[in-house]
Image (cartoon, rainbow, N blue to C red; front, top):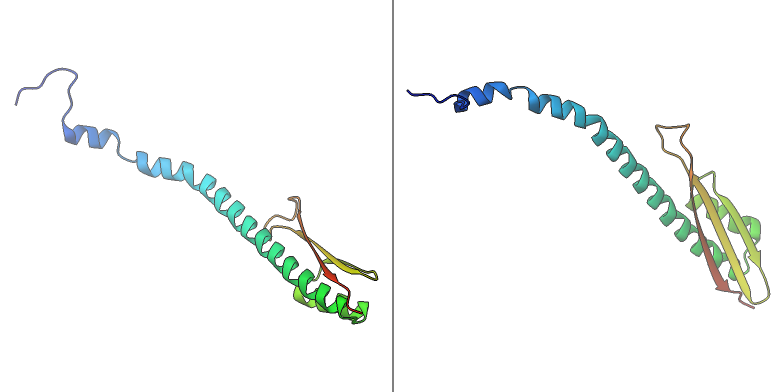
Length: 126
């Protein structure tokens, strides 16, 4: 076999790059975990937003029907998270319910909270 200077065989190239995939994976894994954690936090925030929308809508309907406001707040609190702030206002024509929740990631207590809220209105029934 004739070899030219500067040329390497396939076997020599494989042995020179041996272990680089393991090193690249080890370097990439922490970044992948951060991206995964951020995605899970975003899913948690979207879930809280949907809970707020549903709870505000149901509470606005109940308040518009004339149910006591304390009962409306209890109903809204049972449909969303325990730390929710619930504001109910009922006028002659319009009933309004606003629910606000702070969402924190379960793994990072020092990270800032994301605040999600929903507002629902309904015509007050006579």
